[in-house]
Length: 82
Length: 82
Image (cartoon, rainbow over all chains, first blue to last red; front, side, top):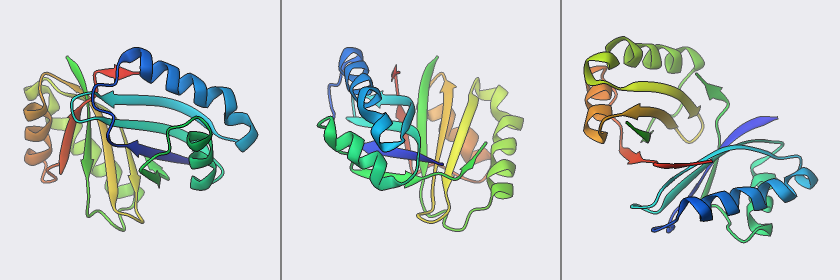
């Protein structure tokens, strides 16, 4: 399993409730792809959302996000962490 | 204190040792700006580094990174987290 950081743009005005709902939708379907979403952070002003996950591939991360209606604009493996 | 996610581009080929050294340099000088760097993640292939911190302002985050020789390309407040 590799760690991934994915980024969503265009989410200006996102609320805490919307972020929570999107995250919970991902959690509800992630098992079938072997993905584990860990944390997510949002900047409502610039409309940027970052999601940290562990997953077998970037395609698996994207499939979860697509299934829940919010595909990521970028998915980066982040094998290095401190 | 607000949480911030900052992003560095152009770091292709970064190693685990370089990420650790950069993070430790930030930790060594962060107190004077009231910043607390929490975690950092790197994608050596695309050359992207993400740093999560709590700080009084985005300018404070950037001053720490400038002082240690690696200014961020983007600094986003991320007041929403799950």
